[in-house]
Length: 635
Image 1 (cartoon, rainbow, N blue to C red):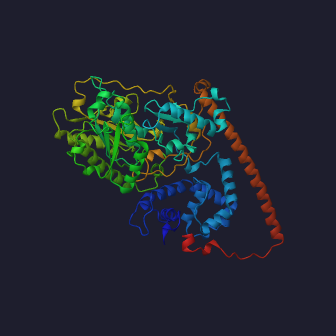
Image 2: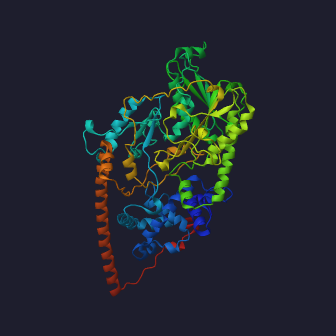
Image 3: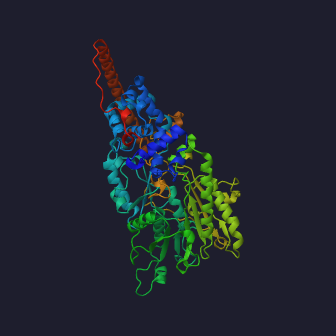
């Protein structure tokens, strides 16, 4: 059987393997030895999302004495995995429709209206999707303004205009422009990072003009920490003489390039308009030579092309009056780069964000599988162990560059084995190779000294309390309003010995109010977003940039005292609360109408059945019965 003849055949086959044979979904999806080609990560995500909704789909099919189950011919369909996947796509999928064709699709679409009525009935009875589809987390929509193409003030003006025209009128409570609560805030930790309500994700996508032109980048907050720490981890960038110190950088695992372009923007802003530094690197006939160069490695050919295209979009060519940083994409393996190569002689800093398990992406399929125990834990542990070995090799290689004096090692994983343990082993195994101030040590990044969550001491990493406090962790499941992330900042001892701690560079918010949780109420009431396909390190974008809310449900209400409730209300949350209440009333009315309509239809059907029993008519044989489906259409 050719599983690639339909967009859902891979997912249907994988789901059958899981339901009929009890195989783990992850082991099925990533088994490259299967005939016909192994399903990809999109297939894995589709199967996980279908599994999330399986109990709801069964309830819909079995409602009213299995009426829809019998009409669709569920029990006679041989490829039940494909049937389940198509039902998910039609009723809960991103586009709410089934792509492609086939006999199973025709039978489902024939009863589409009745299926949707049963879903509405289920929602009205249960107050939302509920069941296994709940538990997803919604964050604010983060937007990084690309300082190489625009600035915060201009982009805020553009976004405000679009917000006023595209946001639902209820979102702002129908207030006049001058009295509306602000819906755009500046992040308190990352420069040039704006915070918008999660509902903005519906129109802030890759077809939005400022995104297409490279003026803004859709990037999660935690993934901005890597470049931020490498550029500003030591504090203010000026030396004792007040001159800007310039150098070259390496991004060891670059594609698709969001972190690379962020580093370029931060370095460019740090250099500023210092004439002394500019003149130091200028030579006759080379007026456009950059002050700093970022060597961006990517070994995958397809991802290298993506990286190259992204850099052309996000990083303009160096010029006298413009950009002072150049990004040089390198199609090659960082582990094979020679530390003594002359082209890396000026490299002083390396950003290493290698392949990882992605367990910090809170709405990823992996997180759901781990929570529901639906896969082989032994294989997962083996994979994490294999990843940590690779990560250790990559970090030790970065530490071997003789002129490099600072390294950022980061992952979007929450596992100690990929984080604290890797850093601890690297420090212990490499320290004996250096002396005279060239030894490596952990340093708490100055730019994030106001971030509260720190690393884990002891455990498998065996780090001391002081070492763990140098590490930065994010936990989206514990209120950090961003995906799980880990950042470590390794520096040569000579950078810190006998020197005073430099001050953190204050963020210029251009007069925009800082975000302090103004969208918390909106995020809580937008619960139960079902995850989208979350690319890993082998896909075309940072995994942490693709979490989009697609469903909502009625949240559980938290009991609060009158005093707490009053204190919890701000002008923006009050407006959001009113809009949510108004929206809920409207949805409730629609559900009641749907339920009443369904009851009327049921009465008509019952009356028709009774009339048919009194005056039975001969049944006509159907030509296209699902039970006679071919392998092409049904398997």
